[in-house]
Image (cartoon, one colour):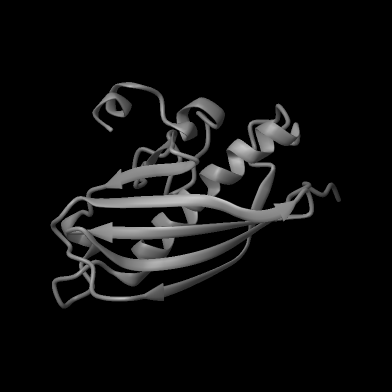
Length: 155
């Protein structure tokens, strides 16, 4: 993964102006998650901040959900490119319609985390992505994200 540190992440390639708190390259106060295509899925590393403490010395569950949600977008982004549904608007072609997260064990606050996600099914109407968060060689949380097409409405 060391080569990925010097290359553009999927977020930087596809959505450089995105201001999403979790993964937006254009949000200077955000988490700026950087994800990369890897072995049929996507992988990211994330170093929690001291401010992400849950009050007990572990990573806050909301931050876990945020990075899992944002990372689950990356296989969807690759699939949207493949399907030709990505568009040129600079917006995500799909939005999270649901995210189910199961916390398996506490997540260390001070260790670098690794995320893995892969597209597990769906079609143009909805995509399913599984996502995992790992620390110290153990799976800490697993999730299933459902992504559906997003079309801005004009009023």
